[in-house]
Amino acid sequence: MTEPSTPVSPLLVDAVGLAELLKISERQVSRLNSAGKLPRSITLGRCRRWRVDEVRAWIDAGGPPRNRWTWRDPA
Image (tube, rainbow, N blue to C red):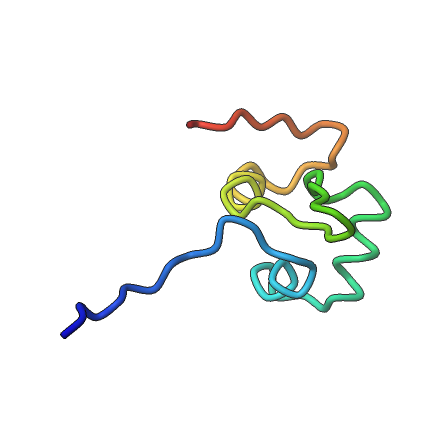
C-alpha cells in the first residue's frame, strides 16, 4: 500500500499560472510583462516561466516595476 501523496506546489508558473496567481487574464499578463511591470521571467528552451516565490515577494513589496524590483533568493 502506498502513502497518500501530498500536493506539491509548483516552483515555476507559465503565463496561465501567473494569471491565475494574480487573478488577471493571460492577455493582461502579456501586457504587463511587455511594459516591464512584472518580475523578470526565466526562459527554459522556448518556455517562459516565473518563480512563484519571487512573484509572491514582488506582490508583498507592492508590485514595483521591473526596473525598480530587486529580489534576493532567500535560499
